[in-house]
Length: 392
Image (tube, rainbow, N blue to C red; front, side, top):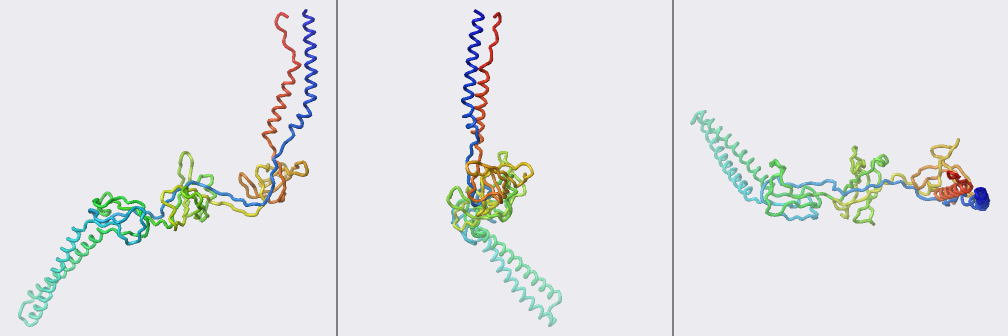
């Protein structure tokens, strides 16, 4: 029985081996077809090569002024609202002026009295000088009238200064626009008592924030990888989230010398100045800036995915190898490239417009190779003998 069992096993193994040989002989030709490289075809042509740096930004006023009052008091008049356009000298706020007007009236009265006393002192001095010349009075009496005249003159100067200061305080109770601009924020209301921005230790009470928005700054954070490509004076295109179809033109006017870190990303602030005559750009709007670093028009371009590093004596910084379609085959050729990014490259020599390049379908080729290796590995197990069980 044992001999018969071994004979049957031998026949079975021979049958399996023959089947394996037949299977491999039938499948090998088709497998060789399947692993032939497959190519995606791309065409070389003329176009525009452009390299840009993009970053998110925020609209900022160029000169934002926090307007305060030099005087303290209660606001009686506040004719402005947020968003109003005002010109230099326009009224922003008027405080209660009763005390200031009273001080002006008092100072004016004291000046009038001082002037009257000066007039009297001048007349007295003139009479005594004549009397002294005739010998009717002593030198001491003449000198006394001269001193009285000097005191009267000093009092006029003193009271005139007091009146000027009182008038200044009256004028300070009226707050006017220091420049043309738009009211960005209104921080007080009529009836509110405010503190002086000059004499108060806290810095005083802000009334409004004012800015000229005819030109604005876009403050954007540029990644440190790209900051080396940005230079002063470069043209930038700004697109606001509020107006996605509108492009505003500006130029780079400032590059921060120090970085800031935001969510573990190192950024450098770049300031782009934009003309905003139509007033569409508002303070605080979110924007995207696009700075063109390189722009070449009408140059020969090829996809970067069709280029591979050259090897051997032709290897170089600007030398690449491509597969050019000639008839039904793809043949290697060396080309020289110029400007390039991750999508396309400028072809300086080696190709012409209309050249068809082949890009190997590496993922599909790898998949076919793995399938072939698996089939061969499985076929080699068909003729393996099983270990004898113990006791046989």
